[in-house]
Structure formats: structure tokens, C-alpha cells
Image (cartoon, each protein chain N blue to C red):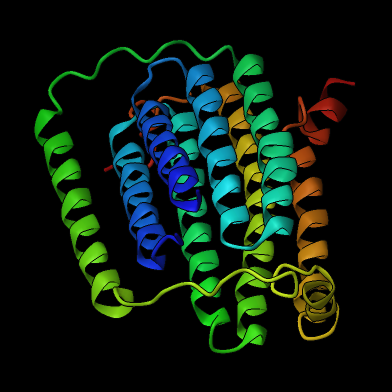
Length: 107
Length: 172
């Protein structure tokens, strides 16, 4: 028995919301970053699920969805590298990456 | 069979995602994100995208999360102490996320509730058409992504340097 495609979409919505809660709740910058990675991945899941749905109409469109996920993966890798380097630079200057204590630009 | 695998790994993904955002120790958060991402890779295989599943394991769990672990250990991140006095903020955040999930879910149902997935055929999971597409239709984005990765590596190295070159000249 095949799984209805909408279940994958619902799972991705649930994972995205868990990631949103994490990004809003946590104060450790690394955990916030992990939550953002979780959100990126849930969107990837929905893209692949849509690719599978569209595969029934035309195989060409299915490959478009998979190609986009490929680019998302590459951009996520670049984002992780730069973000973590930023954390190292911030930690070196402030001795903390607690986002509540990084309030220099707060009015 | 497909249903059983989907059920197992979606529950695993959700449970470990909850651990990611709730555990106080960031090392455990990273480890449970590994579980989430590998579960998602299994779901990618179920959806007929074995190439993306392999990439997910290699790039995400193999490279990105190792980078996270490396930085956590480099910074010696202390455990987060429980937050005080932000209960209202947390409640609003959780409420907003749940409402968002409900809206998103209902929209998915409205749009794709009756959609069923095509049976997987060897042609549907073949790698050659995807490779051809990446190197023809998406050739320009492909090259730009390569440039972006190079720029990211250079930027990361520049940001994480111990001291700016200017300081070193002043000391010398």
C-alpha cells in the first residue's frame, strides 16, 4: 500500500513548526541554528513530496523539484560554514553566544 | 510495507526533532538532528529520490553536522540555564507555531488531499535524467552555487581567523 502524498506534506509542516518553536524559544545561538537547519530540511521534504506528486503528470517536472533540493543542500552548506564562523568570531569577542546577552544593537 | 516504513521513520523524525529543540546540551541536540536527517533520507528514498537521500547523509550528517559538533567543542558551549521570566514569550511562540502548522496542514489538505503518488518505476528513480537536467537546464545555477560555496569557504576562513591582519601589523 502506498502512502498518500499529503502525509509527507503534513510531516514537513509539523517539522517546520517544531523548528520555528526551537528558533523562537532557545537562547543558545547554536541550537537556534540547528532549528533553522531543521526548518530547511522540512521544506526539502515537501519539495521532494511535491516532485513525487508531479511525477504522475510529467516526469520532467519531478526532476525540477529534485534539482531545487540539490541547490538548497548546497546553499545550506555555505550558510552553515559562514554562520558557524560568525559564532566563533562573536564568541572570541564576547565570550558568549547566548543571544539574550548579545544586545549591543538593542535600544 | 511502505506504510510501515513511513510510519516508523516519520515518528522517529518528529521525536528526535522535539529532542533537538528541547535538550539543554547542544551536543545531544546535534546528535538527535542526525537521527532526524537520516530518517528524512529514508523518506527521500520512499519518495523515489535516492540521489538526494545519499546527498542528505553525506552533506548534512557527514559535513554540516560534524562542523556543528566541531564548533560546539571549540567554543566549549556551556549548558543553557533555564530561562526565567519569559513564559509569556514562550507561550506566544508555541501558540504561533501551532496555529501556523494548523493553517499549513489544512492548506496542504485542501490542495493535495486527494493526490496519490505514482508507483515507483526504475525509470522514475534513474539518475541519468537528473544529472542531465543539472548540467543543461540548471547549468548556470549549478556554476553559481559552486562560486557561492567558494565564497563561503573564503568568508568562513576570514571570519574565524584568530586576529585581523591589521592587529598583527600593529603588534609587530
